[in-house]
Length: 402
Ligand SMILES: Nc1ncnc2c1ncn2[C@@H]1O[C@H](COP(=O)(O)OP(=O)(O)OP(=O)(O)O)[C@@H](O)[C@H]1O
Ligand SMILES: [Mg+2]
Image (cartoon, rainbow, N blue to C red):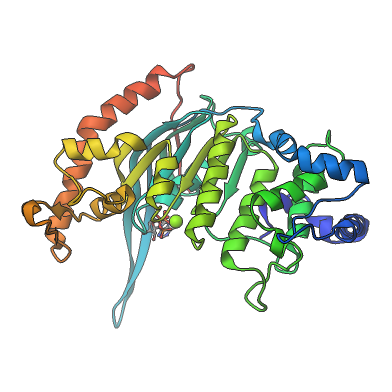
């Protein structure tokens, strides 16, 4: 499969267009000089522009920072079921048993322009599935309603969505600079000149801290290239470049050190503040990262147990009888424990002793069920009301089956 940005222009690697683009990239590489210990680089067109470039770095980035088409995303009662086919073969006969499995169950939410929503949950809880359904790429028995400015998914909406998948899809033989320059030349609007597009690619490289590996190949299974974290940043850069109004990211910080993760998350937050709607899944965020989220949704086995402001999550769980065993716990760790059905028994609080009920699967299931029913009782009705109140047009239900 071709990377997302090149799906529409599969001939770019052959013919004269390839030569032109490569000549262009080569010419930039020749114009670049190391600039101090950090090797910061800038495309040198002429000397005046070099000095301007330093001063107007943020001004130029602002071209990408403001969303042209703010999108309010709503997902209501999203459920997704898959068919499991297991072969039960006897000695003389064989028959196929068809079972179904519910991956998502009545998941709801609303994310407005300027907001950053994080999806949290244990592995296999349905985060990628939910994100894929929002990106309009989910095939199978899907029910519920997902709207973008109260409109259903369309090809024009598809162009406004940036989707960074969990597994990076990049060409192994291209360098970082080439990858991002191709993306810029192919996907940025024609009102920008080629030089401006190339400059945007350079700015994204600087913004994402990819300067050191800009001329290294991406690499793949057969030969080693840039690191996993750098690959992830290149994938994010490809989507950042095209200034999407709705940016969806599947685990953008996995495999990154905490400082780089924080830098990526503050970039995402900054993008959101420019009028974009940003939705990301995340594994084990630090408490610093956690504070950057405006809203969170917590899933357990496909069912939501919390949706709302990240600043209110601890208060909510305390109100239904779940509190961390000690004061300075990372809220994300506490939420993931809860989503796994693990509670911190505070009966021995005076000794600050935690009893983790890890081995008691029955208790864990009971906890999960209790959290799900508390969500349905306390959060679901309010959320439904909020979604309906902010509705400009009647919502049509969508349901597909393949
Ligand atoms: N097409 C499919 N066929 C079989 N199982 C599926 C399919 N799609 C999703 N699943 C299952 O649904 C569950 C949720 O998957 P999903 O990838 O959304 O989880 P996740 O929360 O993103 O997990 P992780 O944190 O590990 O990425 C998993 O148990 C997965 O195995
Ligand atoms: Mg996933």
